[in-house]
Amino acid sequence: MNESDLRLADGRTLHVYDTHPGDDGRLPVVWHHGTPNLGAPPAPLFEASDRLGIRWVSFDRPGYGGSTPAPGRTMSSVAGDVAAVADSLGIDRFAVVGYSGGGSYALGSAASLGDRVEAVVSLAGIAPYDADGLDWFAGMVPSGVLALEAAVRGREAKTAYEASGIEYDPEFTAADLAMFEGPWGWLGSVAGPARDAGPYGHIDDDVSYVLPWGCDPASIAAPVLVVHGGEDGVIPSSHGEWLADHLPDAELRLDPGLGHISVLSYGEDGLEWIREQTG
Image (cartoon, rainbow, N blue to C red; front, top):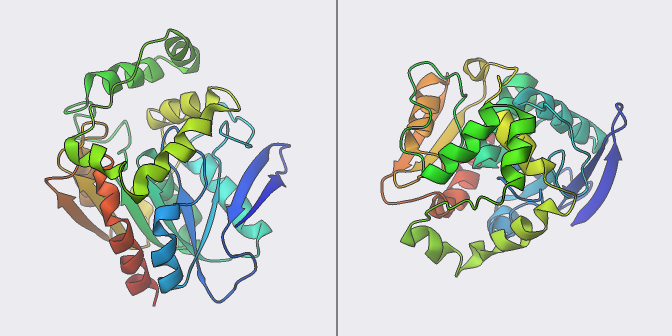
């Protein structure tokens, strides 16, 4: 895998990952990572992606790893970063996959970039904060409510909250915890170093989830697969249901026995679905 730093027109840097540089025979798939993670593409899916002829492209979101912070970033502004990365690699069209908060960024990319995005998979994504008819905090673990209520009060309040030492408890299910004993224990390798550049990747992620997206998910033309676990208390399944109901061409796979981590067991299915959509 190639790692490089891309200098943007506004002076920021993005740290970019590319599993098969220059391989035009593979389908490019942009990976949007969760919170708080680095942007390295999902190693547990490499075997499946090789079988399916997929080339992973990704980057640390602003504020994480080697990418410059961008206060006030939104789903739409990060979509602009996606376009810049794709352009720098000579990639025109691509699919997108996102996990957790990255699912929302994947949807934002599709909404902002039009027909450049061929298909979308959102695994445990977050619905817009202003989603009509959705009780946004309902079913969320108490730690999550507190953390995101701080984000609602703004970046300064969220920064103070993160500095206060309050511990976040995701209340993972038994199925979630079991995932860490297998290939998805890889998550530890991208979560631990995620804050090496400071706290603002995480802070700006959480603030972005309660800001307007800057784009309309209802405008997404590409087919979308929305996957969610019924036992997810980090991002309740009502978010996935709302998204599936409000996207023009969406399929919902709601597994009642899965939580926030165990939903990643659908990752390979998601890649196969992308291949079906893109030929």
